[in-house]
Length: 135
Image (cartoon, rainbow, N blue to C red; front, side, top):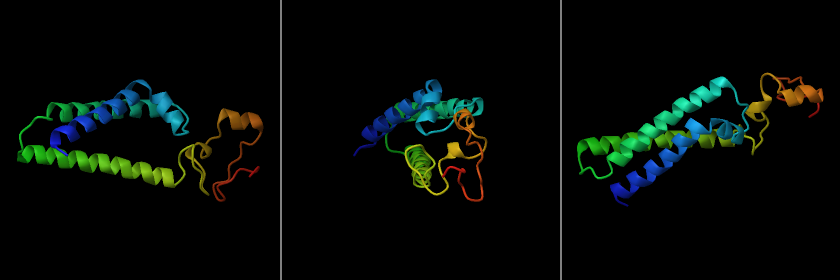
């Protein structure tokens, strides 16, 4: 596969992620089963700008001739996007999203109880056992 095709495909993926985090952070946080709050949205918007910068860098550099700079940019993108993918897999395997569950439970069950859990009367969470009283 040529650098041109790889750069364009990666820039499209980064553009989609960037726009998603910049304009639909609430949707993305809910998809992971996380409660939406101001801090999460702030970090999400900032991450969106980073993704958009990556998209722009790759798209504008898609026709660059082979050079040391192009190789360094490609390696940096490979490492950074690879680490993001690895982190996502680790979080998924650990059950820290709404679609999977492990002994520790998803992130949304840790810390302060949600309004829904407070209303149901099951607001206690025991960090030692990683369980609520009803489990």
